[in-house]
Length: 475
Ligand code: SF4
Image (cartoon, rainbow, N blue to C red; front, side):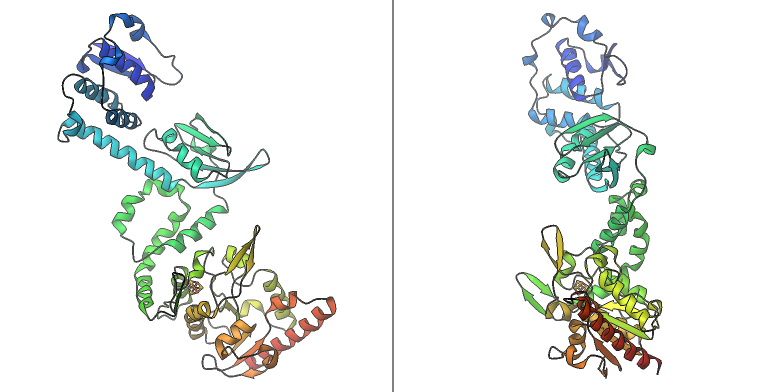
């Protein structure tokens, strides 16, 4: 029996296998021994057999397909891959030139099983690597921890370099680590899990993203669990959401079915439908259903649905236009500069912000890029019509004593496009949707006043309008 020691890489095995073939050593006469990276390669076998005594290497021709298959199979973790590869090589070069076509052959079947496992592992790594942001040498660096089943890190590295070309990142694994500095890929030894960074704020963003793209109508629990086996869950921030999303799936499917209602509009390949709201008296259920809303094109460029917030039976409901940049990122309504001004004005009017329900007419942020900034764009009448069922549903659940429309978008959603806030503000009005309504300007209008004097005057007027609403709510 010949013992062949080699580094467990395809290149090293290839050299050893070629020598064994040249010396006509049968597969069953070889014991393949993998060397650790810290062991010196023992070229005993190669040195013992001078090349002149062997057949010329060119004599051993194999199909290109075999080379590609062998390279892939060499990434498998099972040590039996090396004798298997040599058996295939031996048979291909000893009269069985069509061996690769014989799928029922046990060696070929085993090779295909190994190949499948490798491909699956490559796919899993692409799907389940999650980067966490850290600071490294004064730069942003993204680090991920992954435990591949096989030796696929190098094989997969260029995929991540292409996909995340503009980021500096490292993927750490127990066997091998790969790093990208926006120019070059480098590889280092594997590391223990403890060297990977812990959870960070990116995980919340990732969870939000996942909740938004989760399609309850497409979910097949068994297929999902096969695709995302539990062993990957511990590295996936979104895994904590899966049980609740699965639980909500039937309800969300029902609401999606309602989306088959008449189309509101179609333009440039985009479509607008009335948002599919579920029949419920639960704000949590409404909020959950709104997360997956795709009734108009606005969801595509926004981070998440920004649903209303506040006590279920609040006496006062405030309806704004749409979330802004900060609201879009945080998922909470009225927390940006206009929201902070609203808080101040509520306080000055004697209203406790925690006792009111605040929401928007349109639940996704509509914006256009300007340089690195996202600039607010007014929602169109189609956007408003599509989103209207959400605030109607909120109104039906909360049933506030008074609805305060902040700005013309909210007011016109109730009273029609001819309604003028400048004329009607601060008056107690009636509408079909809410028995008592007060309209006033949007707090962002106060931020746009040209000078301090105008700002002070307009702010006082705004607080006065809120006072009208408060007195109506208390009656
Ligand atoms: S803006 Fe409203 S209707 Fe449009 S996708 Fe968002 S939640 Fe749905």
